[in-house]
Amino acid sequence: MTITDLIPVLRGTGTRRAVDEVDRLREENAKLLERQAAADDFFESQDKLITDLEADVRKLKVRAETAEQTIEQLKADNRRLRAELAPHRAAEANANAVDVPPMERDTTAVEDQATAPIEVLTLRQAFGTNPAHVPSWARDTDTRPLPKAVAS
Image 1 (spheres, helix red, strand yellow):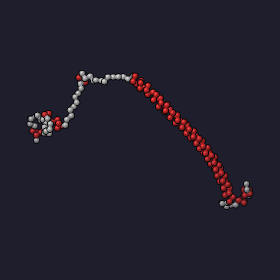
Image 2 (tube, rainbow, N blue to C red):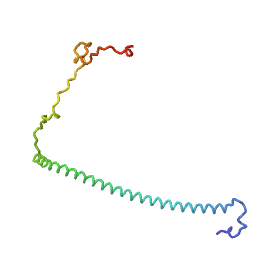
Image 3 (cartoon, rainbow, N blue to C red):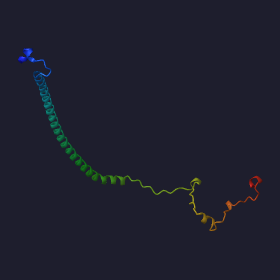
Image 4 (cartoon, rainbow, N blue to C red):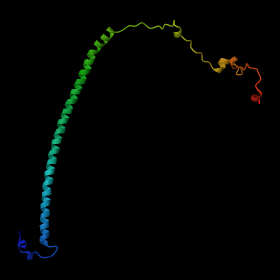
C-alpha cells in the first residue's frame, strides 16, 4: 500500500494518471508471469510425452524386428517341411491312383448315332463354275400365268 492509497487527494483527478497505469501494468505483468509458468508446465509435459513416445517407438521397432526374424525362420521351416513332405505326397498319390481305360462311346442306340461332318462349300463350288446356273430347288417350276391384278 502506498501513500497515495491512504490520502485520496494526492491521487489526482486526471484520466491518465501514472499511478493507475503502474497498477495496471503490474497486474498485467502478474498475469503474463502466470501464463508463462503455465506454458512452461505445458511444454515440460509435452517434452515428457515426446520422450515417452520415442521410447515406445523404439520398443515397437525392436518388437517388429523380432517378429520379422520369427517370420523368416517360420518361412524357412515351412519350405524345409514342404520339401520333406513332397516325396511322401507323391508316393501316396501314386499308391491311390485310379487307372481307367480310355472310354469308347457306345453308338448302338439310334439317338447316339455319330454324325458326319457338314460339308461347307462356296456358292461357286456348290453350283458349279457357271454363275448363271440355277439349282433345281430354286427353279420356278410353276408355269401358270399370274392373276391379272398381280400382273399389272
